[in-house]
Image (cartoon, rainbow, N blue to C red; front, side, top):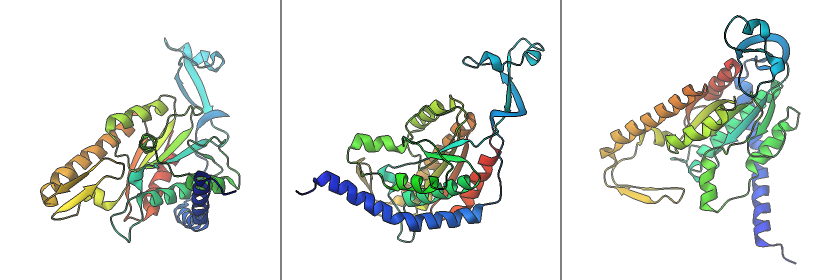
Length: 300
């Protein structure tokens, strides 16, 4: 009996994705080795015995955590927080929307390929430091085991192709999940969605005391619109096409809007205590990854 076409297509896609794992993992580990600066033992709030800080009592906090001596000094209740004595859970996410499958030149990687490389390189750095890593959207517990990186890579690259337009459009921002308090997120994508949507989604995580780091991955042509003359632009997510007779006439306005959008992203990140980094695919990934890793090491 012939295998049903949908199942065959999914299996073929999974096999094709799996064939990319060894070279991609090898490249990611080379990037990680270049970036690795020996920054380990990052301080976190948690269940250790070493005092970390006092903070105001919030609804939902355990009454047993109240430091009554500190609270007696003011009109407010204070929680005594201690330093995290074990590895934290760090959740990783990569934009899977169609807009990431684009490159402006043959010598440049697609945005999705670069995001995959950076995500896996970061995962390699984190597992070396003993951190537990997990892929957002996958129903698996985060792990720091020796096979955690391989499993994460397979889950990242082995996703079946999606054809429903509404489902594709939902992939450009991370779906909210109820993560453990004080977890951290590292998000890789082009973040070209409306700022209002991005702000609303990220605040869902930040409101639960989830720390985060945003890496905007762009093709250099998206940053400065270098095209000239008569040019047709076609959307990758069924959002139409447009013909511009002279791109030079709209370049300044485009760059201004992109600059405003990035400033908005930076403001969103700052307002919720997250970090924001821009990376273009014509740059070496090590530079952005080092900046990201240092910011994660310094995060409260």
